[in-house]
Amino acid sequence: MAKVMIVEDENIVAMDIKQRLEMLGYEVTATVTTGEEAIELAEKTRPDVILMDIVLKGEIDGIEAAEEIRRRFGIPIIYITAYSDKKTLESAKVTEPFGYIIKPFEDRELQSVIEITLYKDKIEKKLRESEERYRAIIRSLNDVLFTLDANEKYTMVSGQIQDYGLAEEEMIGKTPREVFGTAGEIHHQENQKVLKGESRAYHWKWEKDGKILYFMVSLSPLRDSEGEIIGITGILKDITALKEYELTLKKENRISRALANLAKELLKPISLEKISDNVIEYARKLTESQFCIIEVVNREGLKECIIPEETLKECQLKEKPKMTRLWDWIMENRKPLLSNNPQEDHRLPHIPADHVKIENLLMVPTLLQNELVGIIALANKDGGYDKKDLEIVERLADLYSIAIKRKQDEERNRIIIQKFLKIVSEILEELK
Image (cartoon, rainbow, N blue to C red; front, side, top):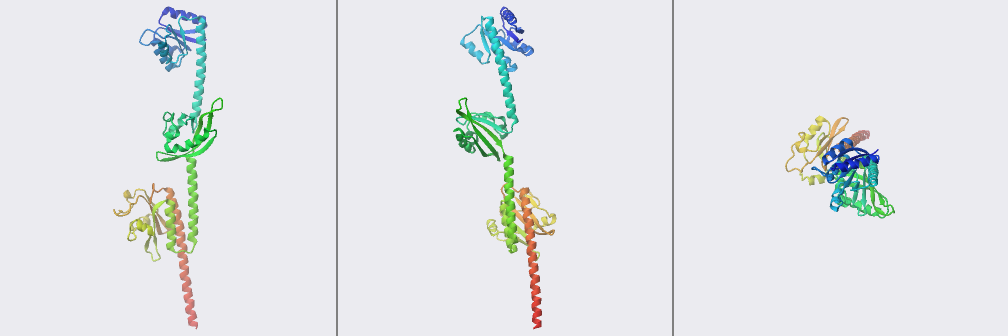
């Protein structure tokens, strides 16, 4: 049995409607005369439908009361009124009523309007439930779903877009080029193909607030019931983590290949100076540093700074600098020094005002059988040095120490052979 509440300020009319409803098989939950009472009793009795007179006594008329009830409780409203003029009906339409009954009315008309209202309300509730389920499913997805019209303007964007600093209301009615600027040009090009009937999938790189994001975009034509293309449906899938892993893997492979090539170079019969030059070149390129120098201990136990000629010119140095304090620090600590703020780092010596500006610094000791034989020093990498740079230079330091040991062994063997040949030569002279 459907429950009905009557809001009518004329008691005789209200009693007549109540009797009619009960005869038609409805339960009347309340009969009230003011808009204020209507709101209060609607909350308490929760009827299935409300018959609301438009003109009521009190501060709130029927239209205002209906608007409040509909907003707060979602109860369908049927207006009953003796006024059928256009102005009254236009005012009532704003509250989205389910129907009108113009006084006087017949029982059959009253029943028909109530039953249609109950049916429409039931359908609307099911539709709302379906929409909520749909929205819940959309919210549970990590991907951004969207639709565009035939003019490439967004008509729907799922809430996940807010994870990227955008809001649906900011995008609706705009094209990708208007939302993303020049970065949206690729979307325009792909949208045009989809509007001609193709389905497209492509990768998109977007820089947002200094961070680079990567997406997989999938597009399909949106068709009407007759098969005509009326827009586009799309999915925006964030693949940043996957792309970063892929780029890291590529970089790691590049570094490994470079180190393998360096190892081959260092196996060749080259001088200690050439060994240092090779290590300097690879260290600077692999860490994307502006400068790289090496300080080594020569055969006499003296420290020697190896600096490429172009670095001397770029730094406007007339003579090779001394790194005594840095050498002493690494000698004492036997560990790398990484500083992305050299001016504030107490471990570093004062840098003269006329010296080329050092933005950041990375120094790694080269150890040979636990003996410090050199330092690889790099400076000025865009964005600063990190653990990956440190790992690369440590691997270079290992290769460098092995190459130095091999060269020293070669030199030692050469000296031994020379001494042996000299002794043999002297013996042969005596035998003569």
